[in-house]
Image 1 (cartoon, rainbow, N blue to C red):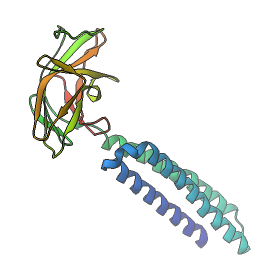
Image 2 (cartoon, rainbow, N blue to C red):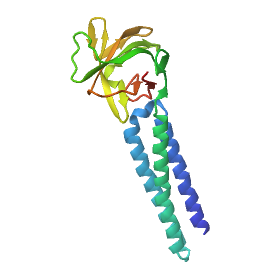
Image 3 (cartoon, rainbow, N blue to C red):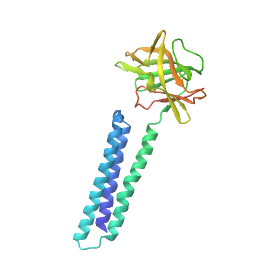
Image 4 (cartoon, one colour):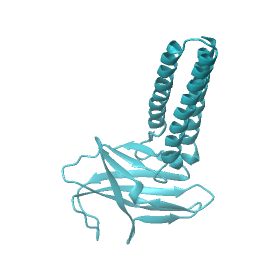
Length: 222
């Protein structure tokens, strides 16, 4: 019995370590690596847990004791704990990746970029901008508060309508229309962010991001 409890404690410790590594990845600047790090951690978690259980059953057998009870308990723990840790990790990841709440007409931050969005509307036209559906536009100021130059990409900004999302196409600044703008340290770009959405769509929120894998800020559409 003692050997079984020892194995269970070791497996629980492995789960705690795995969850800690996952939280460290999804909450740090290495979040972009989560796509391959998290599956790797999951595989190693299962392999180590199975190894611990196998060694425990072997030790019990060598001691001349029955292993049926230990097998059942350890099988349940080996299967249940990684599954539970995985589900919990996904829930935490979704929560931590949820955009921060913001509002129109107020400055919001994502990493080194400060956004101020105003005057949202759908319909009408922007000169020399062609869309297939309905043109939605947001007056937007993008300021770089960091020490190095950054890129503002229209394509990583999103309009959301229920479960659907639509990416930005261009940021129009004066007579210039570009999908990507370089913003120098301390500089600010002011223009109109353009979206091409299907006809009949009523956007509910705008999500602004410094880069594709950042947490972002969600602004309810007024």
